[in-house]
Length: 76
Image (cartoon, rainbow, N blue to C red):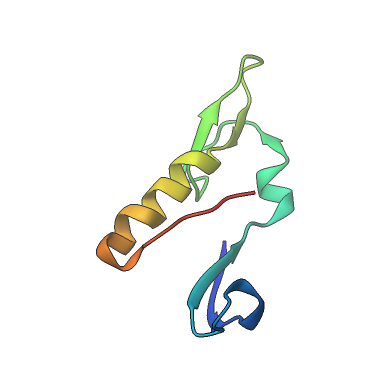
């Protein structure tokens, strides 16, 4: 996950909103992996005994770590 903080004029009427944006590596998010120790990110099991990236959990952790600094959250 890559995070960057900047002022994005197009996301607000006033243009004075600080926004944190994030991008996930597509090879991690879209792929299934076999189980191995120290995989390096949050995963959940699938029905065919593979592992897939647990996007919901990672996003929930970001919101939790942000605490009161997070006023809204959107995911696409």
